[in-house]
Each structure stands twice: as C-alpha cells, then as structure tokens.
Length: 294
Image 1 (cartoon, rainbow, N blue to C red):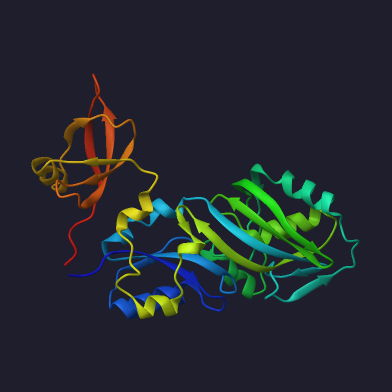
Image 2 (cartoon, rainbow, N blue to C red):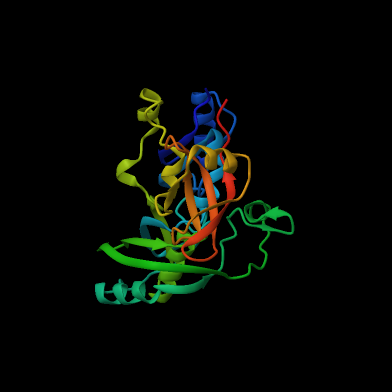
C-alpha cells in the first residue's frame, strides 16, 4: 500500500524547497509530493511536505499563518533584499536605540500593505519576477495586503537586530527587514531566517533529512494532522459509504462550516461542509474525499 501523509521537514540552508521535495520523492519512491509555503534557499526551518493522497490537503496549510525568527543587518542594500544578493548600496548609520527599534517593530502590527521584491516567484505578464530581475529588468509591482499578528525584538547589537514575527501567508520577511530599516532611517537586509511554525506544525517537532532517512516510516504523520483546528464528525458505516460515493447526507449540526470526516472505524476519509437546516440538524456535503491509497 502506498504511504500517504505529511512530513514536518526541517529544511537546511542551501537547499531549495524543490530539492527537499525531490529528496522525499526519491526516498519514498512516490510521485505525488507537494509542500506548503516555499522557503528561500538560504533560509532554514519548517517545510511541511505532503505525500500520496495527502497532497490534496496542501491548500489547507498554505493559507495558515507562519512564524519566523529573522536577523536584520544595518547599513546595506542588496538586489535580493537579503545578504545573498549583490550589494547595491552602503550607507553609514546611527545605531537606533532599543526603544526606537521596539516602537518601529510595533508599528507593523496589524493589516498593512507590502510591495513584493523583484526576486520573488510572483508572475507578471506570464513571467516570474525573479526571471525578469535576473535579466536586469525592474517592473512595477502592486502592493499586497498582509497581516502582521505579532512582532517582537529578541536581541540587538551594533550591526543589527534579531526579531520574531508571526504573519499571514504572502509576507516577505526580506521586504519587511528593508521596511523596518527605512523606518529606522537605516539601510537593512535580512541576514538570517528560520521558519519556526506553519499552522500547527512547530520547529520543535520537525525532522532533519538525516532523521527522516533513518526512520522514514515513523516520519510520516497522518493526513488529518493538518486539520487540528477543524472539528471532527464520525459517521456510521452506511453514512461513510454514502459520503465516499460523493453523496450529501443528513447529520447533527456540529456548529462548524468545514468538518473532518471519519468513518465508522475512525479512519479519516476527508473534509465536508455542513449546511444548517433546522432543529439542530444539517446536511453534510463532501468537499474533498481522500480515496484509499493503492
């Protein structure tokens, strides 16, 4: 039987997210592999990798908020926004005080807009921005709405700071570092980044590639581990079969829109949507049913 589930990978710096997917594909001899939330090659941290039928659930983690620890270095500007790029500007600066830094960091909390960097995978006119950037082109980018839930100073030193941030999908930490520097009247680049959380997946529970290689069966979490925030419903044998066949059934109202569906043997079979009817009852419509692995 083909294995299906999610692996909480600790991506090392120096590998692309695609490299990690290729490693997992080879290790498990499986074609259906995907990941949630690309990490830059120089960055480290959590990269949830989905295998088998679980790849159908990637979208439920892609939209999750994420947490990072980042280092910002003052006095430089690069074409990529991090210290891997070409230096395009240097400027002396007066080191900001801790109170100034904390005030500026706090100013980013909440809904805001961010202009994506040229070195990103966003497409403009059918081409990825980083492809245009490598060809020496710069194009206008539209600001994108992002949400910074929390941001806090971890430590400061003469040449930079380290901070923690929790933010929505689509937030570029490289751009955030440059924007922080701008508000502090300094040039700034991101010089280190580790992703510490993606949804319910934490850094403490992540596995290195060596750990996965040594114990590949135990490295795979169940597919429903991506849906810890979604309430569950358990169906009878007859109801389970009906849902597996794509039919809508009647059920007791759980109080949620989306629910995890388990069959009468407590096996996770997919996701459904409840629509309230009356007197505590609802209809349950299959949204995404995971067919058995073969």
